Length: 220
Length: 223
Image (cartoon, rainbow over all chains, first blue to last red; front, side, top):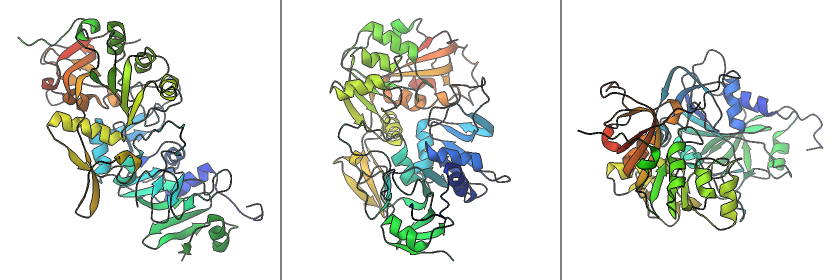
C-alpha cells in the first residue's frame, strides 16, 4: 500500500471506536478476546449496552483499580474485571445458552480469514505442530443474532484476510454479518462482500484490488 | 441423619481409582479446586481422564497433576495458554491425549449427562473439524451435530459456602462449570471456603441443591 500516500488507515483504537459507534442502546454484546476487547473502551455515552462474558457474567464493567483485583471476577481472557450495578452471575450452561439460544444481539470476534459467504476462520491455523484451542469461538460465531468481525485487512505479509473461500479450518459456516477492518466496513449478504465505508485516501477500486476478491460498492 | 461433610480433602478423594474420569471445575484459576487436586496428587491415582475448560496453568493445580504424569487424556476447550507449558510439553511429546470440545458443548454435554439426556443436536461446530464424523441433521432449516453426554466418575468443584446436605452457593465468576459438573458426576466432591449450619443458606439463593453433591470439604480460604 506504499503507492497510496494519502491513505489513512485506522489504528486499533480507531477500529474499536468505529465498531462501538454501530452498537445501539439496549444491546447485549459479547466481545471476543484480543482486538474486540478494545470496543468496551469506546461505547458511546448515553447508551446502555450490556456486556456478556462467557465465564458467567452479564453487566461486565471495566478493569478494577490497581490493588482492587478480585480473581473470582474475571473475563474470558482471565483478566480481572468489575461487575456493574444490575450485573448477574450464572453458570456455564446458562452462559452458552445465551449465545446458542440467540439471546445475544451482537458478538465481535477477531479472525484469520472471512469468506464471501460469511464463513469464519479464527481458531486454528491448521499447522501440524500447533496445539488447537477453540474456547467459546464456535459457540459465539453461530450463536449471536449478529456476528461482527474486527480485524486488520491484510496479514503481516500483505495477504488479504477477505477471501473467496477460507483455507484455514472453519470456526463457523455462513455466520459473519459484517467485517470492520483498518481500511473499510464490509457487509456480507447473499451477494457476497458489500463495502459500506472506506477510510479516507482509498478508492473503492484500490480497496477491491488490495482485497483480491469480488466486492460491490454499497456506499450511498 | 445426612452429613456430607468430610473432614479432609485426603479422606474425600481416598477412593478414586486408576482410570477414573474426573470433571474439574474452574475457568483458569477462578473456581479451580486446588486443595482437592493436591490431595489427588498425594493419593496416587493414575491413568486419569480429566474434563476441564483448560489444561492447567503454570505449575500448580491441574498443571501439577499433569506434570506428575497421572493424566492419560484431557477433554477441554482451551488447552493452549501463555502459561500452559506443562500441557504443551506433554502434547508435543505425544504423552497425553487431547479431545478438544467447544466450550458451550463441554458445558451442555455435562448438563445433558446430569439431566438424563441421551444425546442432543447442537448447531455449534457444524461442518468444522470438531464435528468429526458424528451424525448431523437439518431441523427447521438449520444444521446440527449430534452431541453425546459427558459423565464423570467424580467431579471436583469449588464453592463459597456449603451445608451438611450439600447445598451450595458460589462466588462471582468462580461459579462457572461448578453447577453443571456437580450434576454430571456419580460422586461430586466440593471444597468450600466455609461450612454453614443447615438453614443458613437462603433457599431462594441456593445455586446447587444438595442432591447433586456427595461430599463437602471445608478448606481454609487461601490468604
